[in-house]
Image (tube, rainbow, N blue to C red; front, side, top):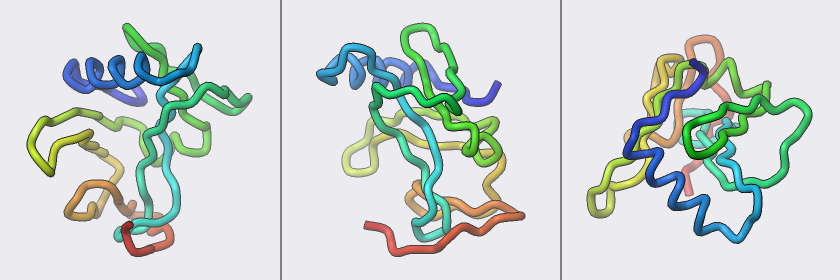
Length: 119
C-alpha cells in the first residue's frame, strides 16, 4: 500500500474535501524541495488529474500522487491529531531518515533535497 490513512485522518479529509467548492475534489499528496530538512510534504485539495498521477481509491475519497513522488512517500502513514496549536495532519514516513521537529519536512538516506527556511 503506497499510502495508509487513519480513520481520524480520513474523516478530516472527507470534511475538507466536502467543504471545498470543487465538484470532483481529490486530495493531492506529494513532495517538494524545501523545508528545514530538505524535502517537504504537500497536501492540497485538487481537481486536476495529470496523466502521470497515481490514483489511490480510499473508502470515501481519492488521493492523487504524481508518479515522481512515489519513491519518497511509499509506505507513508497519514494521521490527524486534535490538539491546540500542534494539532493537524501527521506523517509517518518509513523512507525518512531525518525529520524536522514539526514533522513537515524530511530527508532520505540517498537524497537530502534543498534545505530552505520553513515559513
